[in-house]
Length: 324
Image (cartoon, rainbow, N blue to C red; front, side, top):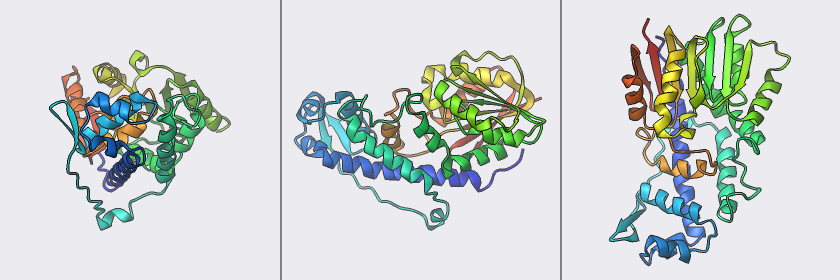
């Protein structure tokens, strides 16, 4: 298989910096909304929830849990105590050239949404629903960062003219870009459960005559009909309950031709420290569960009755080769 030097490393560097910025914004939120002041009195969790004047208690509880997850808060004898927390924003000089600007505006917009979400999760300024806010998601999928990881996937999966590709959780942009990659002699099947996002994808590929087929489907209900040279699973498992990983991965492997390649891309929680900070903001989407661990994904893959080899590409990508 082709090596993928550089491109996945750039993806990793940008994910790492997203996490760093999210930590800093959590600290800003905690200060702005009086959370740290309330926690300085070492309240019980219940006392904290009702002494902090934020109406959305469910989100506040998630905020407190996130502070625990990254080590700012510790529960001692049933009380929440602020722990000494030192965070150094250390950016290796080689990362500066790798950092992409497009995702910054997206995260800034999501940060802004949190203030409204603390009022109510259904506030009209919270634009994280896949169907209701499909335009926002389309903008997010059109950033330079999203373009970068799609190119990394194409390279890792060796998607070429004439290839057949199954893309689970395809979104609104991948059908066009992967459709171009397989060309008029190939075939691309994109699966997503958001009809609004699929409508945008259809409009994008319309008139290009690309060999693209799109299907509205919950990936847990996937039933293999065709076999594919490549299967892509990017930023999908975070919306799947961990107990359903096995079902999704089994079906994905089942659709893969012998000799085919599956590529998975995620900010794996066991490869990125403090990823809980980024998860807090992603949870503004009610469908978000959590980022998967690379180890648990590998465990599911290795437990299935398929002859496979697994390769870790950087910290955010797994490449699975189905042996002939």
